Length: 138
Image 1 (cartoon, helix red, strand yellow):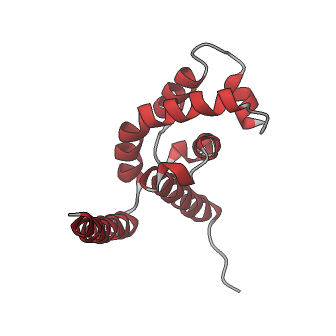
Image 2 (image 1 turned 60 degrees about the vertical axis):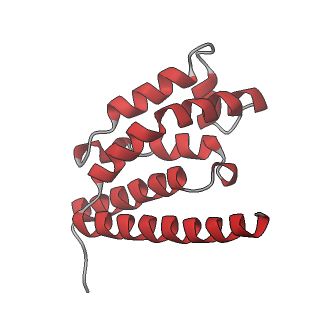
């Protein structure tokens, strides 16, 4: 029976978590519930031993709790209000670029190559489709 070292399993879990966060940032903003991103990012606490995201979690938490110290707690407990969602979305968009840069650094070499290949293909296709769609309107 093949078994893996627990630290290797933890590292794989962290890679999957970082990839999921990157997909959240890369996908259409309308298709993502902002609190999902926050919960996923908070779930990377155990991954700090492989790649430290503490500062990024803290920055996001600070923005989320800017005028209501209980907002992050409500989000993590699935008790957020529509007003909370708006603030969380704003906070997520404010941190998106720095988070994306840091999450890409956290990827292993094969996952890094995979991420960039997929992103380039998606951009190419969307540009092609966008230009084609645009040409129809001219």
